[in-house]
Amino acid sequence: MSTITTANTDLQMAAIIAKVQSGERLTIEDGIYLYQTDDLLTLGQLANQVNLRKNGKKVYFIENMSLYFTNVCESYCAFCNFRKDQGEEGSYTLSGEEMVEHVNKHIHPGIREFHIVGGHNTHVPFQYYVDSLQTLTDHYPDVTLKAYTAAEIEFFTRISGLSTTEVLKKLQQAGLKSLTGGGAEILSDQYRQKMKVDKANVEQYLDVHRAAHQLGMKTHTTMLYGSIESHEDRIRHMVQIRELQDETNGFMVFIPLSMQPKNKNAGIMRRNSAYEDLKTIAISRLMIDNIDHIKAYFINIGAQLTQMALSFGASDVHGTIINERISHAAGALTPEGLTRKELIWLIKGAGRIPVERDTFYNEIQVYE
Image (cartoon, rainbow, N blue to C red):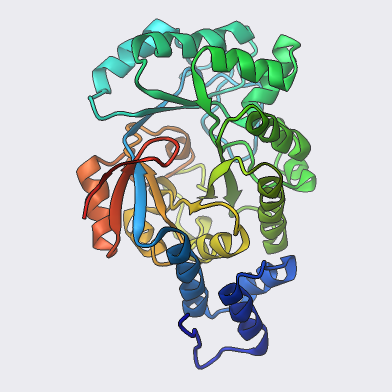
């Protein structure tokens, strides 16, 4: 194993380097220190080393479409600019057939996954959400449905009176294959109270993914960072995900999501710095040692920083997406999607090997 040192390596960083190189798990205190250090190059080298150990130079992407059946939502989360009240200008609730019309305008034969999230709309019954998936399954049986956040699943239990497992089983019967990672925000009840995260609490978020894993479902998980949370809050979030992964081995990827300002015209002081974004991706790779992939989400951090992230521990750049709405409603300045050719170019430009995958990281094609 190569030795990683810089001129300013101190004793605590040297101890962390030794742990990483021997495969020893990092502690909460280690993670907090990594946020405090200004030795970004050593941090990046360590994360890169761990990623190469897990994935070699392969970087994964998928041809997918983001779909949003409704933006009507009962919650008023402080960071969200996607939600609308029923009847408010710009609010919508699409039927399954209306969504099929939308998909038919944009889909092409390479699409392998629908990424489906939306508002917590109390004006429609749970069966609406089941029927939405069933309609897509009927029209596009070869496209994998990755749908709903853990917060949406918890919402479904409240409007249906069913248990989490019963809700998941009904959705599986309609074609659900995986859960999206959203709704985690920061896994701290204090944070959620301050940020008015009026949806699934920490325990409920984790319990939904636990139940999904127990049903044999592989899922995704996220962390929305860059608002009021402390570095310790972020590390404790990562540790809670790591502990559930120890228990279930059901997560495929961890996705650090850089908080976006509500106003697209907001200046750079209202956005996370590139320095903070790279640090968070690298620390995620080092702390969450039992999930194979860390995603660099170009929608939030941009294509060029995504390239840099591939040397800081990331092994996934998400997918083509096509018309992303949630981050862009919150002020993202990035493209609403990229083509397969652009993703391949982006990955090769970082000196890595692009791999087109399916939802479950089965390799479809390697572009060497």
